Length: 122
Image (cartoon, rainbow, N blue to C red):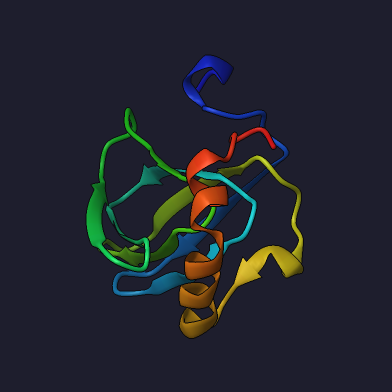
């Protein structure tokens, strides 16, 4: 990965190693953008904007998925020892997380314009 390929300045990087069938994520962020990269294995990513859902498969080292703020995301690990690398434009802040789906829907209803115009470096 090179800085020109990631749509924001990187403030935090972490990895998640999970077994086949593990489900991770199940949250959204108020302000943090993320770029997901499957380093090893196969990971299915479900993205939900409160109205539509779309599923992406990360199974190649030359691809990644940009998730802006205000998108509910869930990762399902499809192979044993799959590894997800996550790049973020914000440092960890528990207050940024939306972990309850009904609160996420309320957030989306009240912040639609902010989400649509948000710069990933903000």
